[in-house]
Amino acid sequence: MTRAQRRVGTAWFTWFTLAWLVLWAIQLTPVQLLIPLQLDSPDDADGWVRGVVTAGLVLAVGGAAGLVAGPLAGAWSDRTTSPLGRRRPWALAGTWIGAVSLVGTAFADRPVPVALGWIGVSVGVAVSSSALTAMIADQLEDQRGAASAAIGSAQAIGVIVGVAAVTLLGLDVTGGYLLLAALVALVGTVTSLLLPDPRPEAAALESAPVETSTVSGVPFRWLWTGRLVVNVGNALGTGLLFFFLLYGLDRDPDHAEDDLLLLIVVYTVFVVVASVAAGSWSDRTGRRHGLVVASAVVQAAAGVVLAVAPSYAAGFVAAALIGTGYGAFMTVGLALGTDLLPADVDHARDLGLLNVSANLGQLLGPLVGAGLVAASGGFTLVFMTSAVLSVAGGLMTRGVRVPRE
Image 1: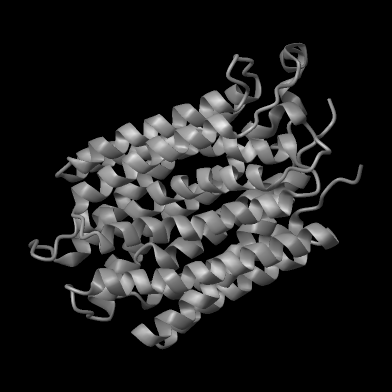
Image 2: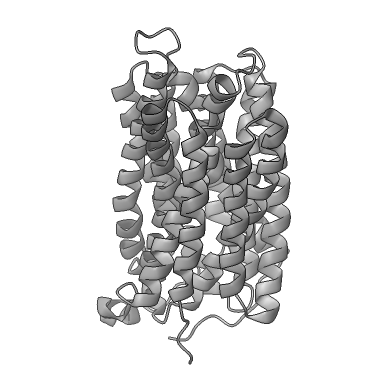
C-alpha cells in the first residue's frame, strides 16, 4: 500500500479544523477555567494551595487515562473495516464519550466525581484525536505541515472560544460544561460524518504485522519524549494561569476571568500566526529540525519573563512568546512525526502515541506545577521550571532523523 499522494482542498481543511477546534475547547476550557473554579478553595483551612493541588491531581488522572486510551483506540482504528469507514467510527465514539462525560462533570460537586468525569472527557478526546490525526498520514503527503498548522491553530482558537463563551455569556461552572457538551456533540458529529475516510483493502489490514510500526525506533522515542517535556513546560506556563492571576498577582477575583480571557486572546493570535507560518515554511523547505528547537527556546523565554518580572503587563509579553514558540513547535513537530511513519496500516496507533505525549504533558503540567507551588508557596519556581523543560524538550528533538526512502 502506498502513501496518499493527492492534495485536499478548502472543504477538507475546514471540517478538519472545526473538528479539532471543538476537541481542544472541551479539553482546555476545563483545564484553564472550569476545573480551577470547580475546585478552588480560598476559604478552606489549608488555603488556596489545596485547590491548586487538587486540580493538579484531577488533571493528571485524566492524562493517565488518555495515555492508555489513545494508542489502544489508534491500534483498533488501524484495523477497522466497518461500513462507516476506518477512522470515522472512532471519531464519533470519542465525540460522544466526551459529550456524556462533560454532562456528568457538570453536576459533580466533589473532587472524586470531578476526577471520574474528567477521565471520561480525556478518554473521549484521546479516542477522537487518534482517528483525526491519522487522517493526515492517511490522506496527505505534501500538505502535512498545513494540516499540523490547522491543529495548532484550532488549539489556540478552541480554548479562547470555550473560555470566551463561558465568560461573556456569564455562565456558571455547570452551564459551562453543558455548553461544551452540546458543542462537541453537534460539531464533532457533523465533522466526523463529513470528513472523507478512504479505506484500504481489508486483506491488507489483516495481513499487516504490528512490528512494521516505527514506535520502537530511536527517532520516534526522541520525538515522543521531546514533545512530552515541551508540553509539560507549556502547561506550567499556562495551566495554572488562573491561580497565578488570583494569588500570584492579587488580581481582583471579580475580574480575574476577564483578565484570563485577554491573556488567552494574545496567546491565541500568536499561536495561530506561528502555526500557519511555520507549517507553510516547513512544507516548502522540508526543514523541520532547526525550527522545532528554536521554537522551544522561544517558549522558554516566556517562563523567564514571568519568573523575573511577574506582573500583569509582563503576562502579555509572555503570552506572545509562549504562543509563538508553542504554535511553531507543535505544528512542525507533528509534521516531523508523520515523516517518521513507514507503515500505512499503523498510522493511528503511532500518531496516537504522539497525541498522548502532547495531551499527557498538558495534563501533567498542572500536577507538577501544583507540587512546585506547594513546595515554594509561589509561582517563580513554576515558571523557571517551565523554561528549563521547554529548552530540554526542544533539544531532545535533535535526536530525530527521518529515514530516507
